[in-house]
Length: 336
Image 1 (tube, helix red, strand yellow):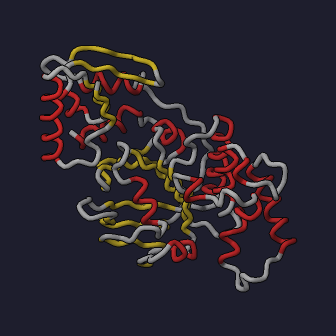
Image 2: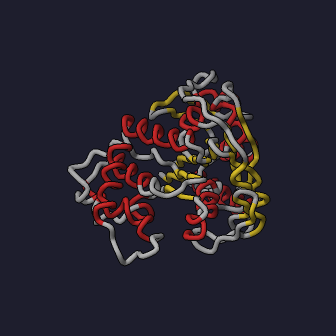
């Protein structure tokens, strides 16, 4: 048995054709193959029968036959194609704070054009691996801009390192908190103070009393469950670690908050507390750009949703009536 999990995600068309030829050769020789993919055109091209799973349960299973019913697959994946539940406070949406015009994140990828306003939460959706995280990392100054223009408060910006963007109030909560968001062996207090320490006029002089006050205030504001400021951050639960990653930016002036799947791997209660903190920052005037692998999180939290494919914006949705079905259909339509 050969199990292929999204094997074509990073392949060019010619490489996909070669892969499919090899799969057909193996199956004719007796190999059973499981092919996992979000690209329905490829499923129709290579598979004999299809199983659709949602939340770990099989919700549909049938022979492909002459053609694959894309609408049926999408409705099974998303459940009832109704309005997603919304429960978010009203916010004042202000002037444009960030603009990307043909922003290219890597050679061979298309450019992304979009804007973000103060107090607005904009979601990045799409199939996995289509450039959502790379866009956030580019905006944060961690990746170089390949082409295009980036403006903060109408001023052109060409960041060379994250520090350049942090100075402008652009802060990133990365997707991997252990490798990118925390010094895992250090204390809660040290992790919360690191960004502020790097921008003090006299960084060699640590104002311990002020640091402790700020730490205790952040712990209380985000309801971080800890035995105290000196507890090693690596001993906290995943949800509380993620609160520390967000909390370290609170002493800074945040104009744009970039969030890469911030609720991944945390429990439901911590997820609610994390998004409550995000809503609070947006209500205070920060623009928020949110990537989440769970489309329901985007539907429940965002004022607008941008669908990303191959690094470009290929669909945009706004309003209370947007459904997961529509967002997925835009992603699959471009993939086909």
